[in-house]
Image 1 (cartoon, rainbow, N blue to C red):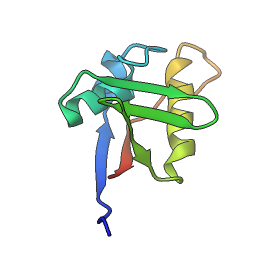
Image 2: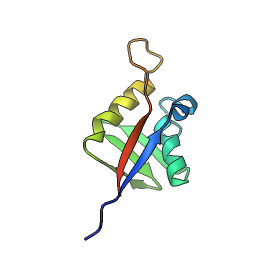
Image 3: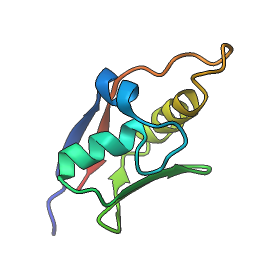
Image 4: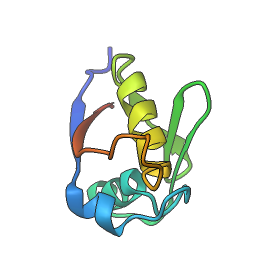
Length: 96
């Protein structure tokens, strides 16, 4: 049986400031994934659940993280809207 390992990835204020809204390869989460996995081959998107891809492989995040990630993406992509709260740094939990 394969052992489950958790990896914690910090999405920092610097990622939020330097990222590009609505860009699946340059958003704040994508920048953090690039830094953590040392690759430019990342993609971040959201539908009814978040999809995080590194080196063509889907990352597994804990079910409890789904809403946190979706909320962050919504706030990040809409941070120019005065009615949407500003995105805050958070720690992403990846299950490997």
